[in-house]
Image (cartoon, rainbow, N blue to C red; front, side):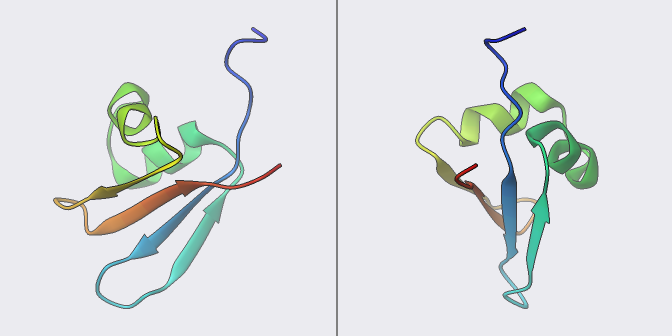
Length: 62
């Protein structure tokens, strides 16, 4: 279990600029309605842009 550390994630809306913070990547994936593995691929470099969902996603320091 040490491999999948709980890491906080921020989602920033393309349209409004509103920033949503989630305590884990899984909770952010549930909010977006996507699988965890789908979201994880966007976070390989610590940040990404989910164009179809309209959010920028980035890992936050713990």
